[in-house]
Length: 441
Image: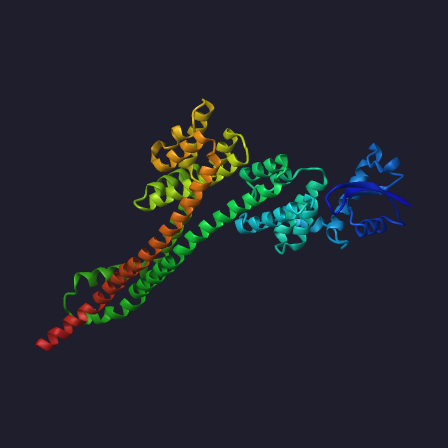
């Protein structure tokens, strides 16, 4: 029996023809032995003469056969159906769009594509190496989309929780400019850098947060558990208690009597705040507060400026049209205030003005950055300038974070030590007074 096939050879070149075999599985095995990655294998009689693989009456059947063939080929004739992981991926998509995981996926794909491996075969290799079942199902879906004739950017578009507009534009630019591996590596660098910055911020805040939480727990235990044990002793003393001790006793009685109201109020407040911050108005006010906080506001502005500089610079270097690049950067800044600024910049560019003419409005972007952008526009090296700005600001921000952390930790220790010490002194002060009066008598 003769089977017609089409696909790619080991060098990535198109390959098609016919092969003699007793069954479809034997034909696939023979093609793999010859080093051919088949995207379509059909019986010669079904596909017409010469293996054109496309008569109208057998199109659906040929498609199903090629779909299964490509999947089995990429899995080394494992013979397992991909229906289960695909359905699992659709029903329970990978949560959060983990930047490190996506960055690793893009790096692997870039390395394989740079070595001349066809995209669909590279995706199959990455799929076999992926341990996360949820993300593996996503890679499977992307591979299947490409086998059906879609481009990589179109395959990525089906997973917006992992790949945003910036990623799609960069991949599309790479596909049209024959430098897909470089674009994938650049995109992986952006995600990796964002993950590093986020990790640096979280890491810097872990110890102060833990320290503050422990101190607050100690205060609550002292007021609600330890202080009541002294209350009977204070009542038997028949002396006027110090004002600080009376205040602590009032707080202790209130917390013990209305703990359910205090706890419920805290939970309701936190829940309401979380829901409010998810609304457009809440996000806008949160971003406004963050960028105008004393000292910390300048650091936050620097982080957002570095992020938009990196994204815009990479898009410009990738020859994405300026208006499209500004729009994608505006959507990816993650700050509503800067998004409004970039919208005004976009309008000015539509009128034929330079980016730098409105970038410094409101003091959101420093004068030094605006001047560097103006120089980049005048010299035609805007992409390089923006990328260099982002690298410089990221380094500066990491230094500032380490400095703030080293200052913040002793300050928290000092404040919490004073609070705990004040509570302890207020608890023992009546005993000191009693001991002093007894000694004096």
